[in-house]
Image 1: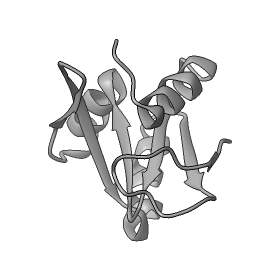
Image 2: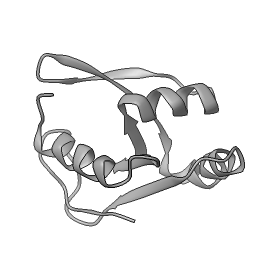
Image 3: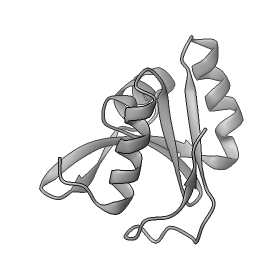
Length: 103
């Protein structure tokens, strides 16, 4: 899969937590990609969209950081393990890599 710096960070963390729904903070939203995005969209009834990564269209779904408590609670109550990765560096501008703090 073609990887930008941002997506390389995401896939590296997802590889460390394969049985966990990994949500990555992107500004004011937590977003998941690939199979995690598909699972989150089905479970929470949120929109499944796509992010262009190179020539691929990668599934993407998420929710606002400000509403994360209720969304995460629903996921956990349904038996999912959830990892929230928080931005710790500069604002994400959609292009460059930001520093994140993993679980």
